[in-house]
Amino acid sequence: QVQLVESGGGLVQPGGSLRLSCAASGFTFSTYTMSWYRQAPGKDRELVARISSGGAGTDYADSVKGRFTISRDNVKNTVYLQMNSLKPEDTAVYYCYADRRGFTFWGQGTQVTVSS
Figure 1 (cartoon, helix red, strand yellow):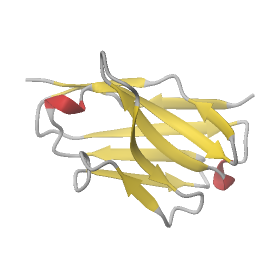
Figure 2 (cartoon, one colour; figure 1 turned 90 degrees about the vertical axis):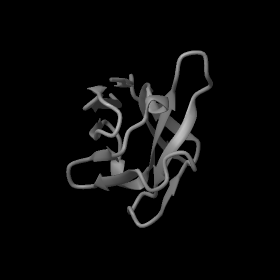
Figure 3 (spheres, rainbow, N blue to C red; figure 1 turned 90 degrees about the horizontal axis):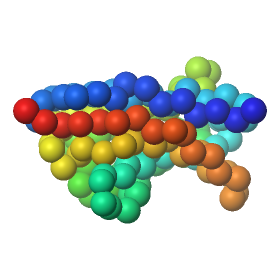
Figure 4 (spheres, rainbow, N blue to C red; figure 1 turned 60 degrees about the vertical axis):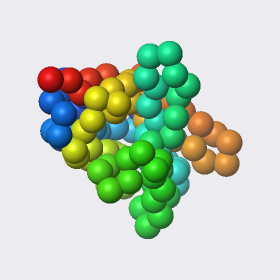
């Protein structure tokens, strides 16, 4: 049974940091490209960051470049999103996503709220 379980979300003040984790099981994690998406109320889901299966390649949305860092541990089957210098506009539900040649899986999401 495939599972992607996100954790680490919460309420944080502007300028603060959070680290999201996504624990994967039920598939060969090390062969999948992993991504973080987010969806704010009333907006479409958007790609935040992506990391290649081996971890060497990463991509980021322009809005988070220099503030967010995606990483993965293929031994622990976990992908991370370190979020620094958080802004109110980063408020959203953050989803973990796995993709390999059209085989895709989504996590259930974790809420991140940036507010004073």
